Image 1 (cartoon, rainbow, N blue to C red):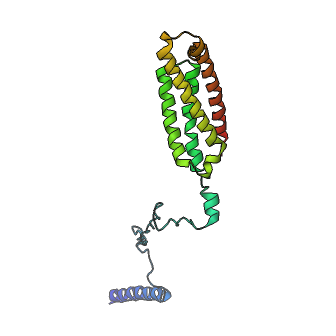
Image 2: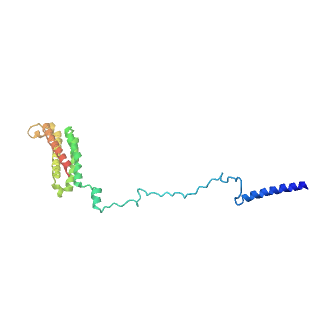
Image 3: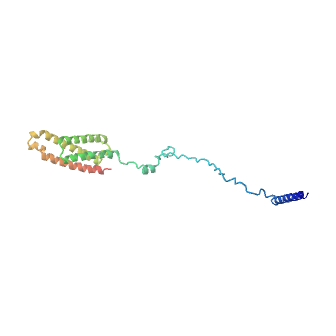
Length: 207
């Protein structure tokens, strides 16, 4: 009986201590070490909407280019800078390289056939020029008149050289035959060269 008595006393003490401990921690929840639930947790990145590229306008797009303000005198006179050189002057300038060639041929004493061919080409261009501007205001210009005079002179010298080459073997350099004298031919060529060089300067200064 005594043994049972001690047993109940010990059991009572155990229950008493357990109840006291439970009462002491009541309302505080679980006492102990909880597992770390965030240890292997990787936060999911928030998905961002894709960036939409805005296409740039094509540089040569017709919608992007503004029409040329041709009716605006400021644009026409300043931006476009129209060529004020008249067609007459442009055509006049085309004679300069022809005349330079003839002048060089005289200086280099080119043969009669080549010289006459260049003079003939010059003459055809002058004829076209005359037919175009004859009777018009341009026909009163100094450049026009000088060009006509030069053409006549160049043709006469070319004819003189051609006749001299043809008749020299049969003529003595006296009386009528003097005009075909080589010295006279050379002098006529020098006169023609001076006239050509002067006309070239006049044509270059024409505006």
